[in-house]
Length: 234
Image (cartoon, rainbow, N blue to C red; front, side):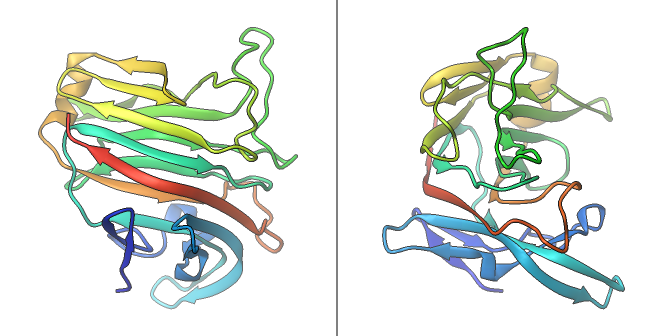
């Protein structure tokens, strides 16, 4: 399996369990969509690149870039500085899930572009939250799965496809706090929810992706650019 050195860590250009998720079979994790440029920036792309998976008897049409860190992480601060990809029906994300089971999962951000190829959306009741870039947490309590709901946050009028923005989560025993451009945007402190996280190790993933609405015959040629990944213990 191909491995990549970036930001001081080792990564693989696919999920630990494989290169295609059967519930998202319109896309597959394509190593040719993962590049590191001369500045050391990571580029995760999307493109039309059909591949036949004999074991599943299906063809997946869209190659997407994903990197999964081989390090197991516990409590700490997790940060990237990134410029979101431009294109229709994209789904870039920076997230973590348990090394052992799912859930738990911490979505530091998930971006959703629309059919107009941007992340802009206007809610008259929340006029500051104009970008469809969300945090979320998936958890399990007494065997029952739940989530804290995707929540959109304000980081001003900086277009996330034209500007590098810092996305960070601080994970401790007592809280998960989310920061966008160093501004606190959300805190999860429910001890029943956090109990599911405290005894696990997390796998960090950064990916470009497409939504179910994508035109699989003519998907966007997009580029998700990440300056760095940074982790520090708390």
